[in-house]
Amino acid sequence: MKNGRVIVLLGPPGAGKGTAAARVAGRLGYEHVSSGDMLRSAARAGTGAGLRARRLMNRGRLVPDELVGAIIREYLEKFPGDGVVLDGFPRTEAQAEMLDRMRGAGIASLAGVFLLKVPEEVLVERLSGRRVCKQCGAVFHVCALPPREPGKCDACGGDLIRRADDEPATVRERLEVYRRQTAPLIDGYRTSGRLWEVKADDPPERVVERITNRLGRAGNRE
Ligand code: AP5
Image 1 (cartoon, rainbow, N blue to C red):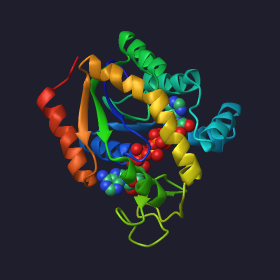
Image 2 (tube, helix red, strand yellow; image 1 turned 120 degrees about the horizontal axis):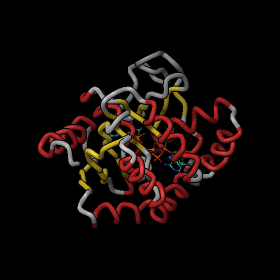
Image 3 (tube, protein in one colour; image 1 turned 90 degrees about the vertical axis):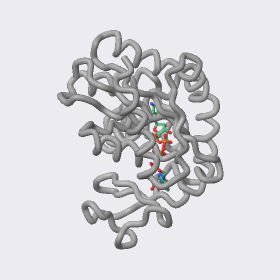
Image 4 (cartoon, rainbow, N blue to C red; image 1 turned 180 degrees about the vertical axis):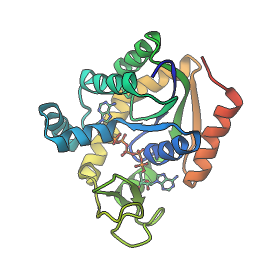
């Protein structure tokens, strides 16, 4: 990608980044790029890095910046399209610097950084009811966004499962890691005037509308 548009979605676990990212990308004809999905697929492939990542992910910890940064950079460098919606990257200050370097190298331009805001009790409820397709990764919620047939993916018919890191103890650890390691990065974007905050405890289509309206009003930020 050469100076392709990058939209970044930030927010705690369960804020709805993946759900909104897929829909925003669909509307704009962009690609939804999820660092979590990329790491889970590396883990399934059984590479050394993937297996190391899985051990950290299952404990609710972050994977090392260099590993995630290299995966995202390589992907963006080769990506042939016009733009991506980044879900899950950056999530530390070091990763935000890596993204800045990708901008400096002409790989990407930042179209918008959005923080999805959801009260903590809603996050926990969303994660405890989340089900994901084992085959294609589509995301559902047992109450809020249920599949047409219980336990089966609407898109491909695959089995729906609970993510290993959605167990209550791991969710608590992920929320704590978010406060410790991601909150400072958000403060940085806020201080530099690059952050748009979005109320995200509404149905997905409302959240997506808030993001795309904001992008439409602003044009390209760089
Ligand atoms: P990752 O997969 O990115 O997980 P996360 O950031 O914790 O976010 P989640 O996927 O849990 O939630 P989400 O905000 O996407 O919500 P979703 O749309 O699914 O990362 C997993 C792990 O990988 C990390 O813990 C770390 O170990 C590692 N990792 C990944 N990136 C990394 C990085 N950059 N650096 C280091 N390590 C990294 O929605 C949740 C539920 O709510 C679903 O059931 C959904 O159906 C429902 N829902 C969503 N939106 C709505 C809505 N508007 N109304 C009602 N229900 C909704």
